[in-house]
Length: 286
Length: 297
Image (cartoon, rainbow over all chains, first blue to last red; front, side, top):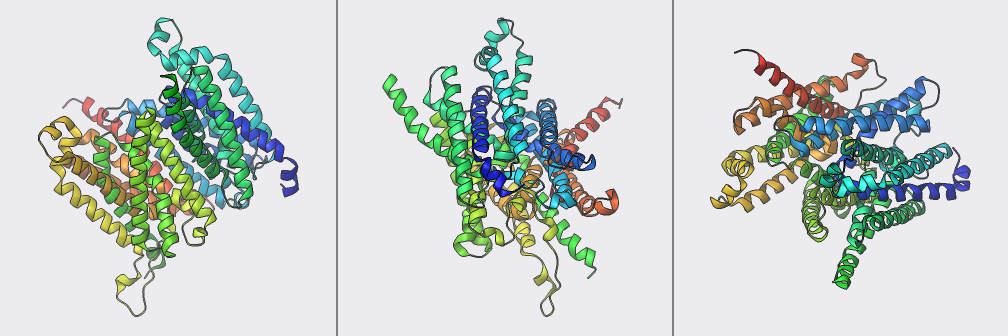
């Protein structure tokens, strides 16, 4: 991958980033409403073992370690497995949801650390490898990876739009959703799928460790500004897209800054602006 | 000294001391259902550590400790303020604050050249147990060659055990019956804050050697491994430390000798191996318990 190729693709990368930011903001609105913020954290960290396995599998099959669709598939499988493990573990006596979250996160990320060190010791892993996946790097994304991100993000957004009403009802009024005969468990599973798809779509950009920030922080900022669910989702998507763009450009301007860290700080800045704005809006309505 | 011992012994000692420090206090966090608070603190202290390093220009333990403690306290206060201002669930408020702090720490590390020393973002996550080694000093007593991380960890382990022993009664009543603790006037606020401070100290001391993933695993897993087998808090702490130490030493040895055991090209990350084993032991321990209790007595 040459620097000239990245230069020619800058606009494509930026568009991909903004699409991911919009998706993360929109999905984040539902993740926050359903109180799944820490599951988003688990899903991000738990993608690491799957990604590392996919890298090794890609090398073994002669496809090359950084085969975009293989990495997405690997990351999504372990992230989903972890999301399933959290409630299963929480059902054990004296464990509870909080401790289950911590155990699953530590276990999957620990396994990820072991596999990551195997990848870094692999001849193909020592150059390039997966190091940029920890904190994200827009500059290290290949053309195929940007295309995979765009396709996955568009498909996830379409799915979110198609089930918007059902997801809204389950998130805000579970009792009503049940009596109205909505398949609450299936819709919860759908939300988990959307969350995992968002995490793996963004992992090369925002990084496995910090991708959770792009899901919860813009959505938290949008919620502060208030309004009905449709408006909050749209505002979260706009804040997400804007902070993703700012983060990507900032990480390009200052060498050495990981894209995920820059995006997270941009999203936090948006939240800090939203706190007083939200209070003003509330005062104006009253 | 034998070359393998000079590498393996300090790493195992560090892992065991981190188990004693984090594992002891983790029992209180788990009983109080605050497991993820430990994770949040482990991420939030990073900018303070790096700032302490940048201000003094050396890896001075004191400066890094002060910086980390300030950052940890600031994060906890900010998360509380944010929760009040936004009515977010506590997990989301914590998540917003600790990712922001961690991102700031990564930014400082990558831009300010602190990574030229042996603090880099990968060590922060996965630890650097592999880089601890004992160099026998030529004209100094034997203990001069022990890496400084070991002394810091030993102090943190002592502090954790002493705190749990001194305030065991107060911590138990806070964990099992907070409203009674308040009524009985066992200074719950003071003990709560002191617990947070001691947990932060244990995290900061363990952080550089074992990384954030193993810190989290050590805070929650030993307590949960012990929970189904213990009849008292004291018993739970004892079982958790025994199980934690066995898994920590075993995990390190498996990872360090992966080349011969699994024919990998290099040794694999030992902090990750220990964390994965600890997490796996939690459901296994519960399975063992339900199997044992199903058998007729």
